[in-house]
Image (cartoon, rainbow, N blue to C red; front, side, top):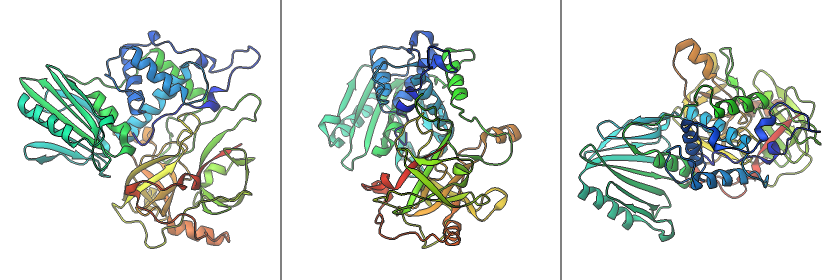
Length: 483
């Protein structure tokens, strides 16, 4: 998925009960025992590991060596230096379930094909007929899935062609069995591909997947999920051990499950537990540079802070804020080497492709910069407020204050909120998918002018988002912490 889905976090894992006392959440730091989990819970963790890019195996709920090693690699990303804990499993499951919900992932049977698979249906366009086959593209064009029905000979021909299309011998992997054919590798344009054919319902069903490298996790999860017969939904059994761990992690680290009012749910991060010797941080968000010493973020990220700093502890000064617009500008004593530019050429256009950069669930789901793609879905915000616009690029708690970028890497808006899923479900019975809000570039520019702040030129040159972000981009978008 977008995104490297999950990298476990040293900051959280460093937090331990002090002096032998039993603290809330202490059980989260106990060694992880897969035997305590139900098969459905183990399948969910295998799915999350596949999405994180550390597991390449079946989603069968069996906790063998491959799954154990994958969780070890995941936990090792925290730098904790010890084996996986219950917190690793809880963080993995929590972020994965949020990702499933945000991107509309669902495990479904494929009509008339005799196989089931999981796909991010909220991000896929309508199915299109292609010479008797069926193809779906993601709306950003980075991921495609094609399905077809044939006999064994035609299926084998597809795999021969896939081997010829592979451009990297080190990436080529194949399976040739009586009931299964698999070929995976890298295309000449750098995209990853996966071709699988299963004998099902008296014939052969072939699934072909291709994805840009940035969506490697999307391809890995979709590929791992393909199976003959009925799907295996991602559910947490009531009363299960993993269910309890996820609930405990959400409670201890204050991960919000949704608001109870019709207002948008601000995309702030959950509480972050600090090491015992450090001052406890309360919330985090995202900010981005518009000059060497100028940072912009969402107003609610810093509104209740006694102190605001960068992740390395550098203190920031709040120069001005507008609670109604939900924008704030900060100054930093240490100059940045890179910064972004406002997209001043034109306002947002309906359907325009955009990318959200930020730090979702910072220190719980990872400390790496995340980048997600989508479209401008409406030219106004809640109650038709024209100062804002709506977009579909997935955002999570912690994305607040991050930039929304156009195809040239310029700032089209500032991420401030997402619609409360729980409220909409309660009110309508339907689940909203990727309804998020940004302050428009025009309003942001006007706010900066009123604050006497002039964005600087000469930061990052314009670039093509389809080719990925350039070196230095990550230095222009940073996490900030509120104490």
